[in-house]
Image (cartoon, rainbow, N blue to C red; front, side, top):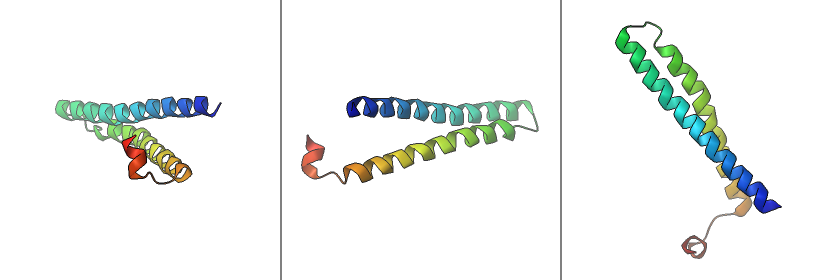
Length: 81
């Protein structure tokens, strides 16, 4: 049962990582396109993308820290396996 929940957490983390990455990159590209055409509000999509993406990355970092706390630090023997 715990293997299944671990797999669900991993899949959820990958989806969140993709969402966060695509939102930041997409917002940056859209902002550059609006800047090129002379739109004065070019910063709005960039701010929205950061508002979605940065909390997503923060959630992922918290999950990684929590996972490391639960499992403890890895030793050299564990890393080589």
